[in-house]
Length: 472
Image (tube, rainbow, N blue to C red; front, side, top):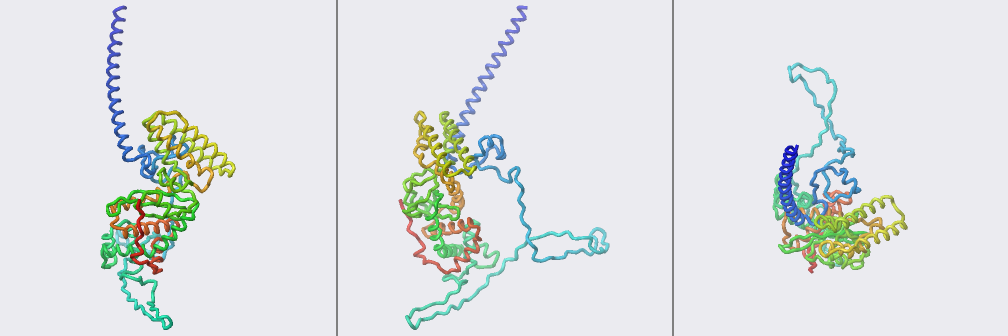
């Protein structure tokens, strides 16, 4: 009996030693994985910091947005979602147009045996949409008569809406060249190739550039009109991103409302730019991120919750003290969003604003050690007056996604063109982007609108075309 117990004890001891060795190996492997994970997180934070817009963040799992975890969070997403139709949504089909003509397609004999066929048994219709062949260019000579007034001696040259004041290319060429650059993202050389291949029009890259400049000069009055509309808006989303002008650092700013989008390229990233674009007397609400230029310009701010949630999540990944802060912020944001969907009264909004403000004050009064967690709480505290305007004002959005979305197209073009060559290029860039973005918002056809502004023949002179770049 004792021998059996001794053998059993020996076997258990050997098994325990084996398990201990296996545990040590797993511990070492776990430490290596932790180290590797930390390095990967550092690289990820370098490439995609907390201020990375949601459109650039991709779901690592590839799962549908209707997963259980996301439902538990109230549907608040921090990634870009998944492409395609979401589960439960009806598919969208393209509306079939009415046919412009009908062609009877018949068959005289059987393709299998060659026997003559009798009358048709029925019709199998197929609707095909086609575009006409590209047309060759038309050369029109406009004999513009000029006159001298007998009364005052003023000389007048007659004008025609299809004859631009300068250059040899017409309205359609100018409009298509501009769309090729700023809608289809073609280099000027490729635009010239397209005109020659499709229409047989002798066109150069320099001609394409001059055409876009003429379109911008013709549309500058409308650009200023858009600026005026934004200056009188109640809510404006503002954001900025870097760009190069002749290799030097500049910034492209966007100012977006529900009906208008304006771009401005400036050397400054300071508060002087919003002051210049919006005017000193602007009294609307600015939706923005935490950049210091905005509070230096206005006290009526709505800070972006998407930014602070991403930053809190980023800090919480490395610091346990930040995890309850991130959780509290997210629960507050999701709860407020759900509550606002009930269409509360103005009095209810005021009470909720006060309650949420107290919640944020309690959050920032937490005792934490110095470091990233304290920095995070400091950012929340400095923005206490700017986190909750959306609770009391129905027209205000809690995030700055509208402005970030507006910067997507300039960022793509920046990757393609690298740098603007000079201030004339800056002028064309901001004007064309503004007009096309605004027309798209308003559901207007950009080609028809470009034709309209060029036909107005209100081109400003080249000297007037180049604005002074605000420096700072």
